[in-house]
Amino acid sequence: MKFLALISEFCVAKPIKNKWRNQSRRINSSKYLCFLLMFSIVLFIFLRHLFFFSMDARPSSHHLSKKMIHSLVGESSSQDSCSGRYIYIHDLPMRFNQDLLTNCQVLARSIDKTSMCEYVQNSGFGPRIISSEASDLWNSNWFWTNQFMLEVIFHDRMKKYKCLTNDSLVASAIFVPYYAGLDLRRYLWGFNTSMRDSSGFDLINWLIQKPQWKTMWGKDHFLVSGRIARDFRRKSDRKSDWGSNFRFLPESKNLSMLTIESGPWENDIAVPYPTSFHPSSDDQVLQWQNLMRTQNRPYLFSFAGASRTRQKNSTRKEIIRHCQASNKLCKLLDCNSVGHECDDPLKLMNLFRSSIFCLQPPGDSLTRRSTFDSILAGCIPVFFHSGSAYTQYLWYLPKNYSNYSVFISATDLKLGKVRIEEKLVTVSKDEEASMREEVIRLIPRIIYGDRRSGLESVEDDAFDLAIKGVLKRVDKLRGSDL
Image (cartoon, rainbow, N blue to C red; front, top):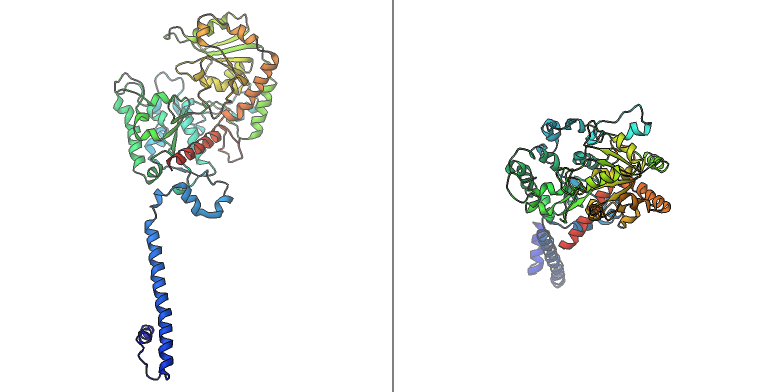
């Protein structure tokens, strides 16, 4: 109060008893002090108003662009090895993932040779392969892996990703751990479309209520499926039609889905099928690659598969006919035969690593897990449709497909214009050796390493390349939205 009184007296030039003896001097001094004090007060009020105005004008935290967030972090971001690579994982209700594993019996079908509950083991790798006939390299890194477990395998790897964050504001991408394929499997046979569509619809409703969704309206979100993309794109509500309509939901179109087989849709990206080889170190990969370089390969080509009796003019039917007529240059593993061993990883590897070329025709869909099994065995794949590999796995396989594979037109094969044996015999030994080496170099890129031990594992395996691809894709989408 005394301070305010002094200001008042200075400004009105009233004398204060016993305080000022020289009136003229007092008046000049009071005017000067009054000016300084009033100027300071006005400046303080102005700066205070400017500060609060700027705070009010800032967008809410969940609407800040990622570039603004990273600029606020400052110079420390340049020293952060995870800068631009942070990923946030949605904490979904357990009905969308873990409950499917806990109650794995709901995934079973009467025709299954092995219970799906068996494949849930070891974080989705399945039971470990133990064989008295196999080397230590086989026994320590090989599993009975089911392709539909990719969702579980990927989720477990995401939990160990070194650039996870609990702050979605600094995340460059957001992972949705929805087991889409396993969830759909429960209702594919004998259920109406409403049952097949319900979980996908519920997931989208859950996501759009989260603040993370509004940052890019889901374009920075991604999920993984162990089923092909077509299984989630049913075009009608007829019960007889296959699959669900999950990917046709308007909000779902913004999500990126990593799937074992994509299609013509830009938001579906193909990643490798999981093989049975899950090494836990680079040394184990190198050992396997060197082993494949030294294999004796007595067969010119081989085929493991079944003919499609319901398909007219089946490519597989022609392949089997050519193989049987090859005078022992081809080895056939007929998966239609009684007691076949097509599901045994050891038997498949023994076949493929004894062959120079491995035939990979379309089956129920364009792609096959066998493609990646043959690459793993150092066997040069032979394709009969560009959609079996060349237009699919763009993040993984070389653009120049002739460097690692042979292409034979399925149409020419059926019309009798080309014979498989004659086509493959024309490949020179130098070309064969070059292609095989390229195939063997691809091995680290198409496997899903085992990081459950916490040890340093394979760098740039199929998981690592998928994450790099997602981050690059989201960054491009983010730039197009600015």
